[in-house]
Image (cartoon, rainbow, N blue to C red; front, side):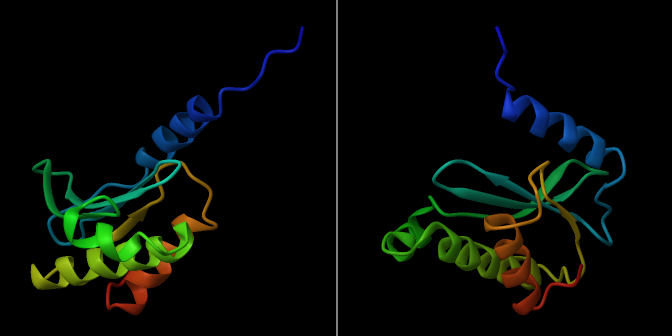
Length: 122
């Protein structure tokens, strides 16, 4: 009998491999992306101190009404723009992008593209 691959276990393995190379510093924190089946979550993290400096997601009350009628990809663009705005408010201009083990396409790429257009550098 053929066993079915556990896609999330493979993603976690990729994520650990990426996290071995990618780390956030106070000068250049890490922009981490988590993608569930229906929502997207982003954090700007300083890994030296372990602090979350900024966060945005499609489930927070301020964005929930806006993303309600959008496709998931367009909602990701809105979340990417919002995380960039919040990071720039805290004087964070440059980040390291952590795709969370996901392939850099679709919703993950849309978050990165929107954050770049909003002024973040990575």
